[in-house]
Length: 414
Image 1 (cartoon, helix red, strand yellow):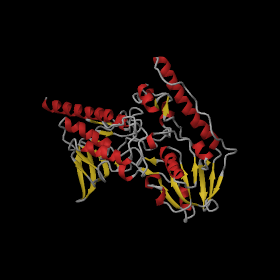
Image 2: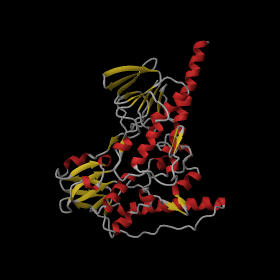
Image 3: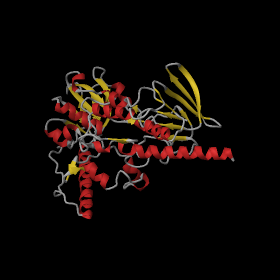
Image 4: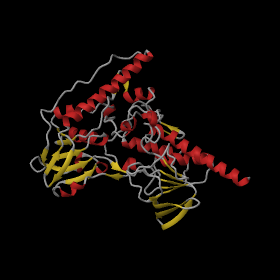
């Protein structure tokens, strides 16, 4: 069998298969867990506490379980995990085509020795849910003198030309990159989307630790409050930088950052924004306070001794929602697109996807016999796609594969 993708998700499946003695191969088009070193900026930290970091046979055991590892520390931790087992991994080997055959799958691989085709009775796709960076089509019509980067290309303020910077998107990456530039003294313009936010610490503990105690990371997707709409929302913005703190866009604005609503179009030096800034800020604050209220109810219900409750009160509000920006007039020399990624499974020839190109799966298992996925957001719970939920998801997939192999052997024996 074949596992396509050598990140932590694919290698977690490999760990469980190897422990059970299942013969398999992992292929990775670059190097194992490379994305942590290659696609994060210099000041990156985890937004989840270190105790969330759990992989098969390997948990965080450092001195700061409630802290937040830096990019370098995450890379070191992951390589420490890789030293605990020996996955059958072929690096610099990309899967370029997967098609269903009568008895399994044919997979075309491109690697150091050229292109070849292999067969497999089972395939686990672990290439990530959203591998293709999103940049809007009108970006090509903007002033060519303005440098454009996707968030995964950003490293630090010094790599950028002098001048102001426009960050588009206020999810985790956009909000943290805007903060990074703001702290470095750069003039920052931020196009704010509909991402919610959460308190870093509340009533004496990290909010994500409270939420874990409340079972939010263990609730199956089908039972999660808010249903499909809640699952499709952008992740809450917060930061683990400098020991962890809130990301308050209103405070940034009070300190000089320029905020706008959703960027809708642009040409040459002119950009247009929807008048959504006030609503976006208010909505993010409502989510922030709603999560705090949920924690209050949990504390009350269990009689937990904790500091008193509080609510966020806005420190700044826009007088009106700006709808335009002239890049040249404002001295903007760089745009950083932080509006996410999209799926790209065009290389898979199988009826396993919905109209939006997302895998149709239940806990990673599709209706196509032998084809599974791992590492997808909300594959099973809110913890799926995060360090906290990977081991459980991988173990479930591996158990199913092992059971099917046993059943096949018994059928042949009879």
